[in-house]
Image 1 (cartoon, rainbow, N blue to C red):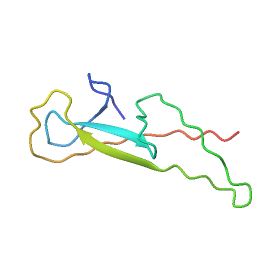
Image 2 (cartoon, rainbow, N blue to C red):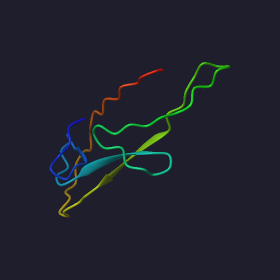
Image 3 (cartoon, rainbow, N blue to C red):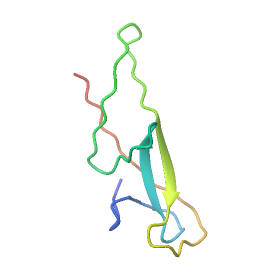
Image 4 (cartoon, one colour):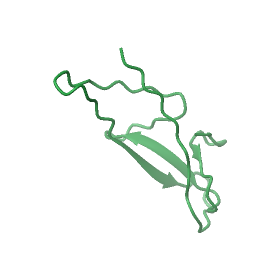
Length: 78
């Protein structure tokens, strides 16, 4: 996803002055270019990526409307 001038993900919906923050399950922010390492379960050959997103306003003045973003993630298995 595209970052706005605040460094958070840009809201592509109709609400103004809203940013989106992607976090891992510990609450660590995952901005554009961030990396996260998770373990692969050898028996099931699966991995879990628990993520959460929150909407916030950095500079205030948020308006009502929709909140929408596309955040692309690249997985590398090694």
